[in-house]
Amino acid sequence: MNSVPTFSKPLNLVLDVSQQGFRDAMAKMGAAVNIITTDGPAGRAGFAATAVCSVTDSPATLLICLNRTASVFNAVMENGVVCVNVLTAAHENLSSLFGGKTPVDERFAAAEWQEGVTGAPMLADAMVSFDCRIIESHDVGTHRVLFCAVQQIREQEADAALVYYKRAYHYLGA
Image (cartoon, rainbow, N blue to C red; front, top):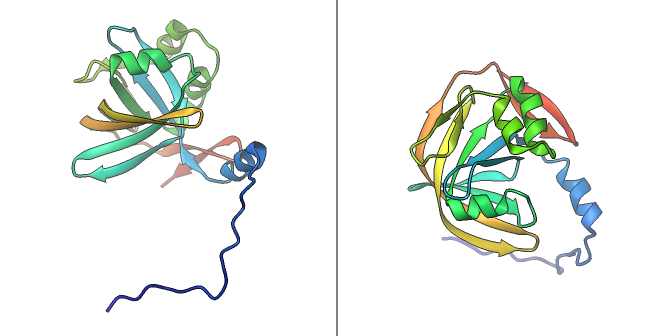
């Protein structure tokens, strides 16, 4: 028989979390570094992101959070497709290009790309690439949460993953 836990006193909730306090706390959450790419009628675009996670394996679905003020926002939404390229330790400089103000053509010229089944660019030497169609989205605060159905997966061996922790790149190896 399942039982519902009871608490002897009310939970202490923090109702006034500052933006900086939240950012500082989130910096302690290590995350894989990804380059999210798109291509289609609105053109080619890409950005670096750590706000990516799995939703379910049946059907294979990812979640991506995208700031609605990002320069790539309109292209991603109009194209309706994305590729999540999971980076290796060798991609630190590429991540910095895609995470900054570098012009789009220069970002893509810095690496080799292949076209996924959706038309989104797949990083040729990514550890894993998830080529996806955006199937649903919801606005939350400053961001749009994208639910993406995986159409194709390509994997390769890598010595170390690129992760972001405490506002710096780190390498996670086998």
